[in-house]
Image (cartoon, rainbow, N blue to C red; front, side, top):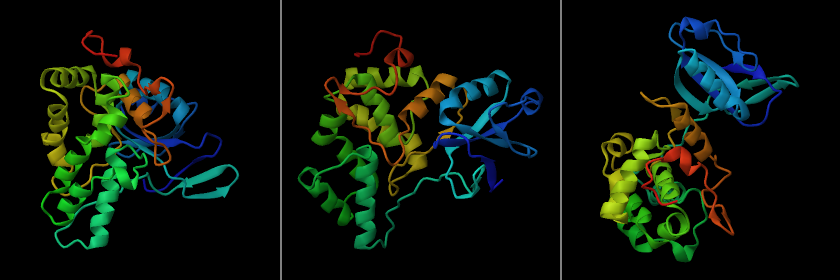
Length: 277
C-alpha cells in the first residue's frame, strides 16, 4: 500500500513494519497497532518507537517474518485523530556520475563527510583537502574517498581513541556499510581482525567487502539502508539497529565526562571475553 492511515495518538517517531504472516500472526489481535488490509504476501503495521521491540518480539514468537522496517514520514494531517502517511522514509542516494558538475562533486563530498562522520560537524581546517582534490580530478573513486575519511586522524580521534573497541566496530558498520551489526559473530570477527591486523585492516574489511561492492560500488556514497530482516537475525539484532538509528537530527558523537555514550550494551554484543570494553 502506498498510503497508510493511522491514529495520531502516539509519539512523533513512527515505523512501518512489513511482515510475511503465518496464520497465527494474521489473526492475531494487535491491541496497540494499526493493522492494514493484508495483501497476498505481506501486510504492514505502524508502530511507535517505544513499543517497537515488544511488538517485533510478538511477531517473531508467532512465527511471522519481518520483511522490512522503515521510518515513516508524516505527510499530512486530515484532522486531530488521523494522520496520513504517503510513503515510508527513503534514503537519499548520492552518486558520482561520469559527467558530474562541480556542484555534483561537492554534493558527493558533503554526503560522504556526513555519512562517514556520523552527521557530526567537520571544521574547514579538519577537512581532507588533498583527498577532496583527488576526487574532483577523478584520480580516486568515491569508495577510495570514503576510505581516506575512515582512515583519517579525525575519524580515529572521534570514533576510536575516545571509546571502546565494541563501540568503534559498531559505528564502522553504520558509517561504512549503512547498517548495524547483525549478530555477535560479526562483532567477534571484527574484534579479532582489529586485534590481529590493526586499524587499517579493520577499515579495509568493510570497504573491500562484497557487501559494500553490491550496495554502493565505486560511485555511491554509503547511506543508512534501513531495517531489513536477514536470515537468522535475532530480536537482539533489531535492537542494535534501533539503538544506532539517530535520524538526521542526531549525531554519533555525544561526548560527556566519560566519553561517547554507548548505544548498545557491550554485554549484548559480545560474551566471548575477547573484547576490550
